[in-house]
Length: 242
Image (tube, rainbow, N blue to C red; front, side):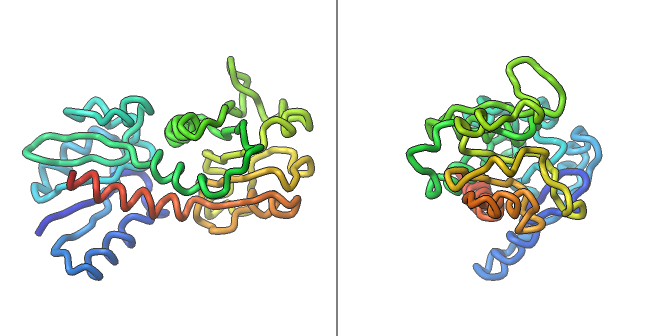
């Protein structure tokens, strides 16, 4: 039986297995989707050796960058972003792709208004790199927000009323607010938000994060990462069979 799967650590919050298992059942596809919880990216080689039927993998935290040296080829998007979340396995060769950018741009595009010209990107990890490339493609300027002072970035303490007048899109790429710590939210001044703000949270568990709730209370438009995940998964399937 053909196999597909997910590598990451930990995988308790994973969406992919349910999505693909349901897809295979619904469409009569004779395949299996497995979770491979590996603490080190180099263990990918063991996974491949022990599962010769594998034709494709999704990659999640913390391995999106660490797997790159193990691959034979990268798509243009994966190279530009510097992170991989889809691996196609064909004839013993591994090619890395990035479907984050597709999922994000197609999910946020319908919500964009003419005044959405600048974005704050909360968090600087692997997911944020794809978001920034996506924002570039949407014609939106962006600035990173980091917990500690770093050159070319804002800290959370730097965000003022003037900042939020310019930056009307805020994308949470950090895990803050993810289950089980649902009573946490990124430390931005929510009281300064308005109806012109758009808050996009990559977190999808819970579906209504505290970040979203606080934004909605100020009249902001809010959206979680669930549709982005669906779009990423669809793109993964296409990459595996391209």
